[in-house]
Length: 420
Image 1 (tube, one colour):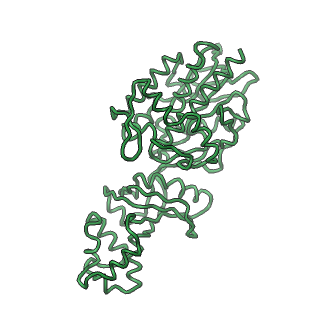
Image 2 (cartoon, helix red, strand yellow):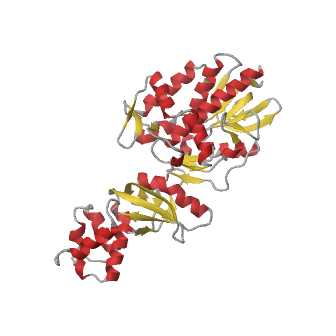
Image 3 (cartoon, one colour):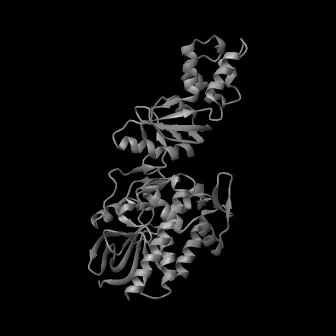
C-alpha cells in the first residue's frame, strides 16, 4: 500500500476537530494540498448529539476563565478571547442555525435538536473542501523530519501538519478512550500527573438516606472541602438524588474538585446546604421564637418534598413531632447541621462512562496560545479536551472546543501554505 500524502491531518472529528477542519479548509481555499479529518467512531459527533439532553448546549452567553479548571486562567483567557461567544453565535447563524438563550444563560439551537448543530458542522466541513473519513481508527503516529507518519486500520498517511483533537477519556463509547493521550506522550509531550473524570455523578454508600430519595431534585449549595475542612469549591444549582448517590448540575460542577483533591492524596468530601436562600442564624432565631406547638416537621413543611423532609429529620437526629423549642442546644445544632451543612460521604464516582468531560491533559504551558501549536513538537497542533482544560456544565467545554479548534485549524493552514 503506497503512502498517502496530505497537507493537514486532523485526528478526531468531535466539536474541536470539526471546527479545526472547517477553518483549516476555509483558510486554505484549495491551496496547499488535501486536508483530511479522521475519526474512529462509526457515528460522527456522538458527543454533540447527546449533549444537553439531545438539544446540544452550544455555548453560554457569558464565558469567563473562572468557569474553567486545569491550566492557568490567563492562558485559557488568551485562547477564549481569540474566538469568543459572539463569534460562535455568528458562525452558526451563517450556517443557518439560530441560537436562543435560556434562563440559565445556556445557548441552544431554536430547533431544540442537536442534529441541527451537527448537520451544520458537517455541511461546513464539506463546503470547506475537507475530506472526513470514518470509521478510520488511528493506531500510531510517528514524528518525521518533514511531518508525521500516521498508521491505522487500512491507513498509511504522511501529513505535513497534524492537529490532534482526540479528546480525553469521557464517554468512551463515542471514541474518546484515551488513546490520544498516549499518542501525544509518545510524540514527546507530558500530561498532568492526574487524569480523572470531570462533570461526573458521585456515589454514596449503600443505605445512605439520600439514595432512598431517587428522583427528587432540589436547589442547594454544594461545597467541596478538604479533609481538614478547607474550602475548595462551592456551587449553587439543583441536586438530583439517585439510587446510587447524587447527580444534577451542582454535582457535575463540583465533582472534579473533589476528585482532584483525592487524586492528590487528600480526603475531600461534599457538604450540602439544603436551604441555600436562607440564613442559618435567622433560621435558628425562627426556631427559638416559634410557638410552643411548632414541631420539627412543621417548621420544614413547604420547604421540601415530603420524602426529603423525612430524610433530613432522620439525619438531624430529631423526630417529626419533636417541638423545636424543647430541643436541647446540642440537638438544635445537630438539626441545623443536617439542613445547612449536611456531610455526604462520597465513596466514588460513576467513571468515564458517565462523565461529560475529562480533567487533566496536556498543559497549556506546552502550547503556543496564538496557534495551539506544540512548543515541543513543531507542526503538531492540539485542540479540545486533550488539553488540560475542563469547564463547568452549561456549554463551557464546547466553547473551549470551538475556540481552540478555530486557532489550531487556521494556524495549521497558514503555516502549511507559507511553506509551499
